[in-house]
Image (cartoon, rainbow, N blue to C red):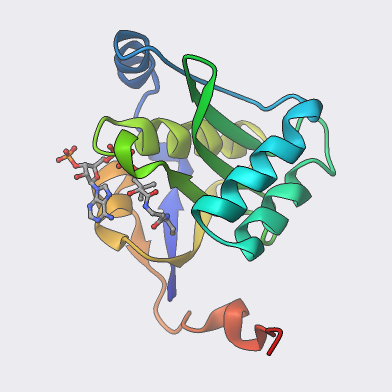
Length: 158
Ligand SMILES: CC(C)(COP(=O)(O)OP(=O)(O)OC[C@H]1O[C@@H](n2cnc3c(N)ncnc32)[C@H](O)[C@@H]1OP(=O)(O)O)[C@@H](O)C(=O)NCCC(=O)NCCS
């Protein structure tokens, strides 16, 4: 698990992806506060408890520092920023049946544009899995020496 760096001042425009989402009936927006339990349960079920806890952190600020993707009132994806650490993007995930349609990129760009508008020049993708996805979407680059980085001191229940 290594971290990646993104140049926020050279982000792709959101317009094309917004249109694409409209065409497939997907809305990417901030969650409402009452959607917090639903989001946490969903992330825990689909991904992990630790990701759900990071999502919960998003609700410590207003508006929440995350975006969700919704299709026909069904949650199909999420992405957080400023949760794991300040200036970090993630965690993020899309339901397996909804992948490959641009939803992950739309969620990523929604967060990164918000970070840019908030004053950050660079964004950090924390502990990446699919590096290729981030290279393709936002030309992210690996931060040398960042593994295990902040994830060194993970603790688990036995
Ligand atoms: C990573 C993830 C969020 C991408 O969501 P998605 O909706 O499938 O992404 P997109 O449809 O926007 O994909 C954009 C491009 O990236 C590529 N891509 C997507 N996931 C990829 C992966 N895991 N590895 C390599 N390339 C990937 C797609 O093939 C697509 O390429 P194309 O434009 O040539 O078709 C999704 O695969 C996921 O939830 N994975 C499991 C959780 C995870 O790994 N989260 C990231 C932790 S850092």
